[in-house]
Length: 312
Image (cartoon, rainbow, N blue to C red; front, side, top):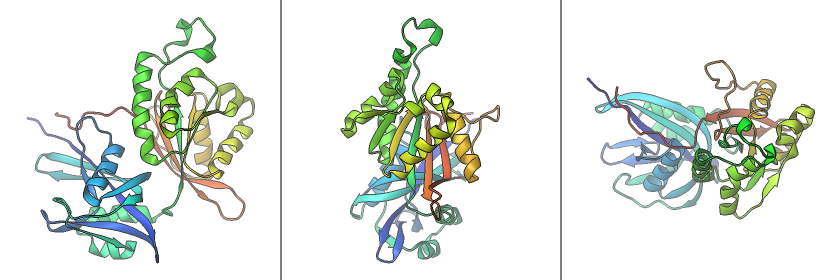
């Protein structure tokens, strides 16, 4: 006997209107319901990519992702279904009625909650409202695979990406733009620079070297490393920072402990940092002069898409 696990993704699409934050609620004539934009993954598609695509198809808006909000699970005829929801800022576009959605309303969150048909959508909206909509996002990337250190006879700083690492870098080049990055920084290692070079080329920006994001620079002065990272957050925009496995877990854990954020951990109860993985870190301005405060941390173990269904 087999069951099919259906994967889908969606978002709370938001914008700033005359009265403050507004969110989009879609009417689907097929079901005669009001819901948040969402839909099933296509083959070879990641969850974040599916969320952005579904927003465009259902609402006509191009969106920039923010934090992951919630995973909702419920049964459907094809088997158990999970939907991952994100916060997504509307960047441009306009709604036109289509086969899936015949009406779109921009409403204050409280009005939207009253219109939504499903409790699960209301729970996602509640999670969205738990934090300010306009957070600062930093994408902290561990460099892709570069082969084994003991098999490389040259300067370790010049150890390049392996064929599998190049595939990871290509996947990151597709994934990272979904959050609207505008600046690219990397530890001064060839493998770090290669991991994000394609993204930088697409954005038309240089890869800036950050000595304090390299292992020896960071561990020589951890306080300076943390301060430099927070300075990058304070500078605004959406930076991508590519670093190493000896830096990322400690940096993320220190931020989380400082600001009281619960982190996902691996089987060994450690902060994960696989090669080619991404931490999506969300910050808000702290009261007074406290600097940026970490409020959410989402971990993407790989940029490579997984099968959209699995059978057991």
